[in-house]
Length: 380
Image (cartoon, rainbow, N blue to C red; front, side):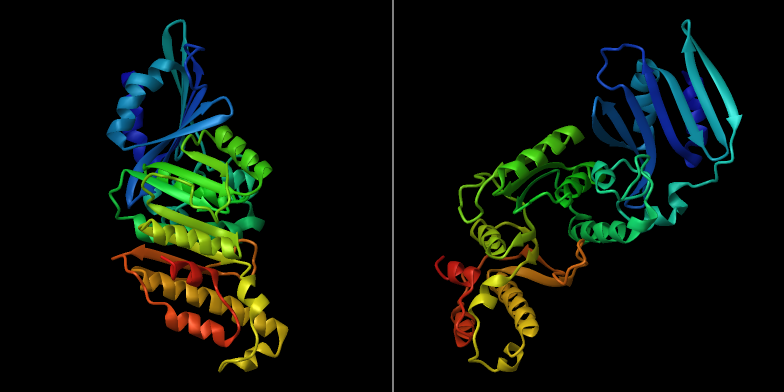
């Protein structure tokens, strides 16, 4: 026992991976545990990946807590331990009640978390067990980036960084997040991973979609990942019977057309503190619009009309949110399917207000159009 702890203390700065296997008690929950170092707010922490059947459970520890876990659990529950560090590999094997230690030199380069550029640059680091990135084909099964998917890897990190910009200094221990029109998007799973694994927050994420088969599929994936706080439901976002408790965040990632408006309406009505919305398919105004305003020249060509309608839609949404008391940023957001729908509305509630939208509705009427969020908020 002392030998294991002494080796771990000595090699912690060069540690790359710890693996515990061969359970002493077959009834113990976790067949295997892997430990990897990572950076969290500039500090080195250690992520435990505990394997139970097809599920993986995560826990983040500092070094003293890791040493305590090894002493009370790791070295007690498992007969084999493999410690991999720069230039060294140490294997412990228990046989006939005695622990045998074998050391061999390796050509592993030094790669401490403090000096690993990619770990500093990206929140979703290469080498971390992130099952959604494996299923998306961004990571190999051993958690290495597939070179041809590096752009997608950066884009997904961009999504997480935009959220992290808001929550990195938050001290909240629990969050409830509603995801409207979730579809089959693995970004919902990435969002859950970010809060529960990287930030250590007890997150409840509820995804809503109209398609029962999509919802069933997503619930099966959540169970397979061991994401107990992630649940999906069949629901029409145009209704308001969704969740009765306190909501901390509303997310819409390509909720189609007016589904985005009803999600934003839900956030406004329930005074939700944070909104992250990536709109999609802004067809409503494009289907109604006709000449009648100062920008008629933008309506003479179908492509320009479509883009103008989309920009007008999102400009109206952003202004309504601002007038309702949200600090609203419109951010260029790289879309994961490489479409021109690349804007995110990132909003934080400062002081709820009842807005006057008469001028916005008058502007829309110049072009013969109405807009769902404008019409619904005007009724509040």
